[in-house]
Length: 226
Image (cartoon, rainbow, N blue to C red; front, top):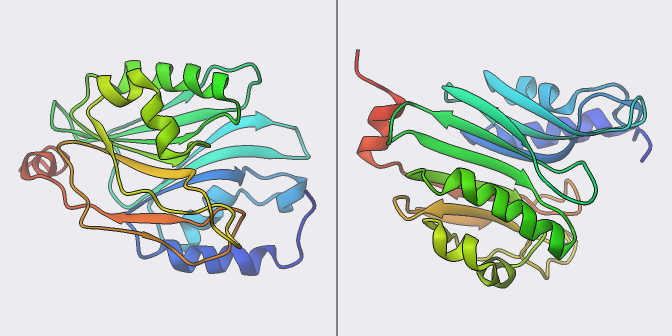
């Protein structure tokens, strides 16, 4: 809630961890307000970890006091970035949709932060289902505020979409993880080579990571021959 005197040191530590990845999704980062001492944390982490591309989605604007945001950091060059305001009783939840490449074999990555309430999540998953359903190569990641069992119980999301969960990872609370609330979901065209929880207590959630080899057709769409 208040600026921490160790904030820049902590952000530097976060940056040193993120540096090893190609694409990073962030939730609850601050866009530059009192609580972060006017530091846009998405921009700062992109510079710290040497990401050439970044995007901040401001979801809950509390003026000078707080700028609650989602963030995307990327070494790959996006073809298109779109932000979505997710439906719900209370505003402030969103998703970033980034596309790499063109055509049916483009790679689509979603960074989402879903509602705490079951009713809110159902509406948000319905909303995202409409967008994701026609796509081929999809990664959806973020704090979805629900367990794998709750995701499977959402019939439309679990059966209508070509998404399958990467194995559940206990990530919350970070100091004694007991629940799998943070997820990386893949379309059936994608297969993870390695999935893991990172043992870094940067927040109340532990970060999760996946190594993801891409199909040849998807790589060709992202890096078209000249």
